[in-house]
Image (tube, rainbow, N blue to C red; front, side):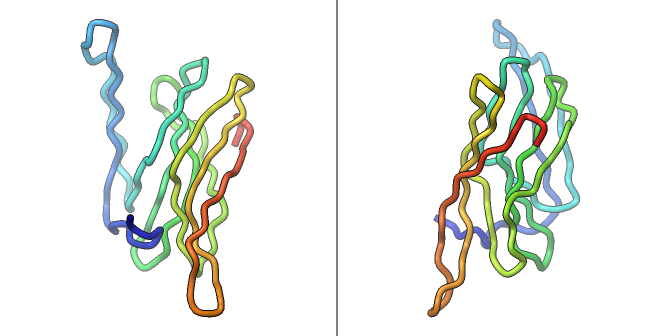
Length: 130
């Protein structure tokens, strides 16, 4: 698998598509970013809010992990950057929201060791307000 630093650089975006019970498209919304963004996993709470585990990367920098919350109309409510060391990359992997609206995310980061870097996994929790 690719390391946390091997993400593509450049302008990208995300496409949100919601289907109704009959399979028709009920929402189709694109979000364009000025840098690389990748949604690695999604979760939806009981109110229809969408939570994304994201990896972002700008030209010349290490990848960064963040979590974003969108309302049911796919308008961004907030985005929170998690542990991101300028010397090492980080990326989002998984996300879930429990019945109390607590958010749990997993990701991958790099840490320094005597002979280079070591890939590490992490688990973090956030409140519904980020």
